[in-house]
Image (tube, rainbow, N blue to C red; front, side, top):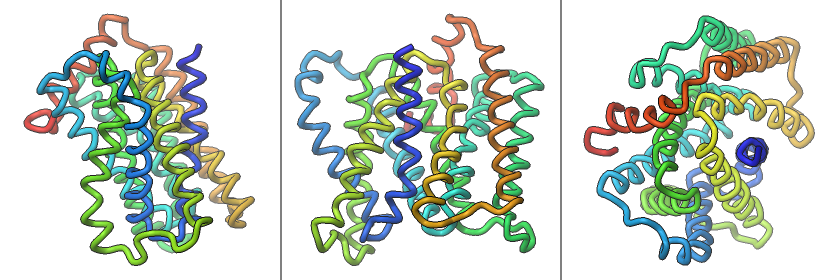
Length: 309
């Protein structure tokens, strides 16, 4: 039960990320870098005692941690820029198509065979997303923001499977420390070289960045990593369906981004499709033995495993 509670809390916290980006006084790249720097500093302060008692990491663990860091940077960079290139509702709905990509990766690399009910649910979800992105009715085109949101969903799905494997041997705090630190190091030259201003000019400007570091990065992603130790990946990823509702409601209250009739219809299809897929996923959960073996197989067979994982 506590894993499920952690999952719900994670969902609420991560849904706030696109909204907080809007309030940041610096651009999305600088915001993401500062988020990672602050999160890394906090995690270093609270983690040493745990690291002293942790099992020694193997070479494969280091490679998986680097892969997780790279995927995390790519995911969140696309996530942050999508939040300013399209509406919050569109960005979050498309970002949360990650369960679709988790299923596709599982079919290809884990040899899983989803039920027809799951595939039907994801089909409905994709149709709903098309309505959401075509709400303006201008050719049903995917814009830059929507494309970045879809890229974020794919990278997050890959990150999801890597973290699922790491959680078999490492604590959620350790994983967050490594991935946040790697992300901060990778983003430093990009943010310093391209962002102007790099830092908020006044104290209130730090509030959304601190909220992202503590609430979204450490709280949201940390709780997700914690929950994945006791829940199947398909079920955990499907809970993303709650984020669009929260984000759309918050965007309506804060930015007056009211959803039109077609967007509302698309949202209903997205949520309904994901709900059906989630239910079918639970009905067809693998055995405990399969569940334990799947992350290992994923780490060995995913493309990133040949050198990065």
